[in-house]
Length: 128
View 1 (tube, rainbow, N blue to C red):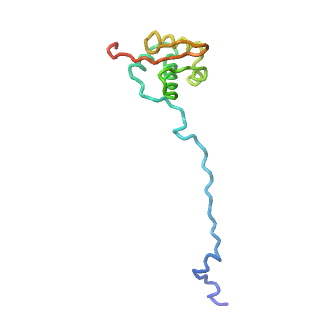
View 2 (view 1 turned 90 degrees about the horizontal axis):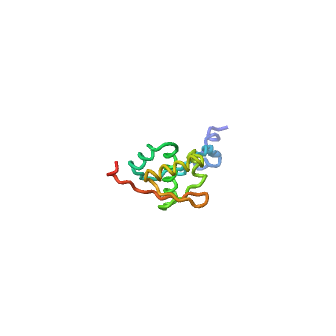
View 3 (view 1 turned 45 degrees about the vertical axis):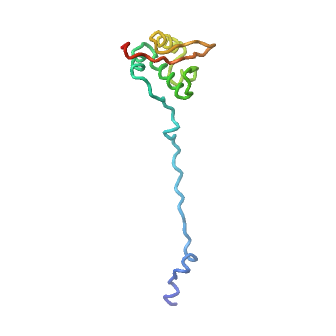
């Protein structure tokens, strides 16, 4: 036996060595940032401050209104039970909150069947 029998020449290297490629394990699927829900702005600072000063779930309902407006892009939004559930508000407390928001001059609300049609009103800076 010669030493040359054990030496593998460069040109015959692929015949003697099998390349094993490691496939990385699949990463755990997480929800990307852009797929989570969010409230589209801008939200007027005086408007949201006035909504926050109202009693009950007024702030919850105000944020739900802006959420739906951001999703639809329409000036008139329709709130349903699904949106109330997303913002942890029951039907009765949401109804009271809508009345508070309307009396404060933040929204104009009409009821159509079991749903509420809402227009967001701008408040003047002079009122504060």
